[in-house]
Image (cartoon, rainbow, N blue to C red; front, side, top):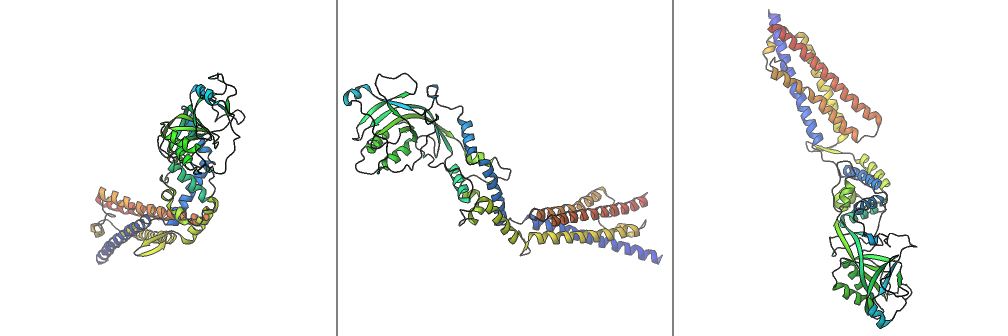
Length: 458
């Protein structure tokens, strides 16, 4: 009897010891999960993700072909009116042609003067305001007060290229479409203005005047950009631009067509344009898999790459990826635990090792207990959900047994993402399988102990 009571007391101490191991295992899982999930990604890891996003954007961008396709689809139903179907801006260079005719009463007064050779005079500044030979353009605002895109930068090879393209898409979120040309004015070198009438190629002449003035090149301007362009000609002998600017400032057309930018003569047509939002940056971002960068300027959408490459603008995106990968491997992900910053790989390795040791020890003691316990043992009276026959306790204990495997899998996954060596990735996976196997052993021992208790109750 004394030996039996001593054995029962020993079994009771087994339960108390198992309870302590159980609490220790749950505490280890909790600390490991808090440590690995509360870690904020380092700037170099965020830069790595942003670099991959930029490379994906480069693939979609295709040197501007993506933008042209999106705009073409957008404006396909907003093409110019039927009488402008043979648009000179879309025609081949040999067929690009528009004829301007002087109004009849002015021709009688001044006579027909053939145009001067179309050469750019030394005081004419290079156009720095938005213009295009196409029948649509991108602008900063709706209507005529916006500024059109000034450059057609399509390269996406270097960091500087990516920054330029991204900021351009952010700055010009509106599409302006030329609907139809209208009549305009001719300004001679003495700043005298004459009304012009429009005649499209192939149409019947508006009046019998021979020969008509044939203009081969047209540029589309928004009203604000054209005024800025004309005011930029500051030479005192250039009265033509100032007269044209004064005429346009009193006109309410949204956009204009300039023939050849000829100075000291100017041929300007009024035009009817429509504008609408076209957020190309947001559309381009949708081409990426989530999580996607936010819209805005480059420093806002890709802050870590922007900070890392302030002095590396000429670096190609491919070289940037190699640079970031090397820097990421050198520095590693840091996790702050009890005031100490530890590499993520270290936390994962030691976390997996600790879980494996504790679960293995738990299994060994539980297995021994399930073989020692006897019917009517006082060990069943020790409070612990692992030996309780209540359904709630049994379900609760089964749920806690999922914690080691889930924690081990998350630790391994966090480490595998930053690890490139296949052998080390395999070791992480085997560690998770080992924790799972031991957890199954604990479950088997638990069921065996409950089977003994059920036998006693029966």
